[in-house]
Length: 238
Image (spheres, rainbow, N blue to C red):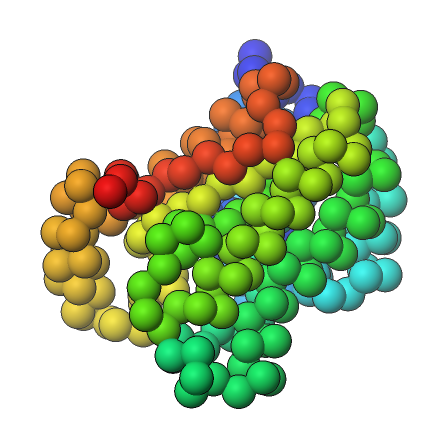
């Protein structure tokens, strides 16, 4: 018997990285898991690798698609919004165009669609968890759009927690995590991540499952709402 037996969990952005790790852990605890992604190739690959999870292709900006998804699941216990959204431009603020800055907010607007369509289907003690990030509170040069997006997500988290209680709304803010976003480095990936990890108090970058465990903890702890849990190896320390 698992601690999440027969609970219905929907993971948006659930075919790679933190989202996939969350889906796998929830399923291992007995939950019925639906995981969606805009990548049809990833959906097919994950469907073959994890038959215990129901995968489908869907973009967070497809409002009607989200509505249909949540209606098809029915009563939902937990929703996780882990989709990264549109492209993010890493450049000084004065060098970014308005279009590039707006594009970074694709993640935030996608999350608002997930919230609007998903919350009505959450059980009264259910939860919605967003993914923010440490740049919301500790920003390096060139990360202004990412920082602003994270702050918007965390602000939405607090506002919704008040508005929809007793349903719960939280966020998890990962630090530097080893995910597929670094695959473009090829053979240099491991060395690059090891070098980046030297500047983190714990001396290494995090793994996707370490963030996923925090997300699942939030699902299981019925007295957490309106907060952001940092999973960053201590990077926010002074």
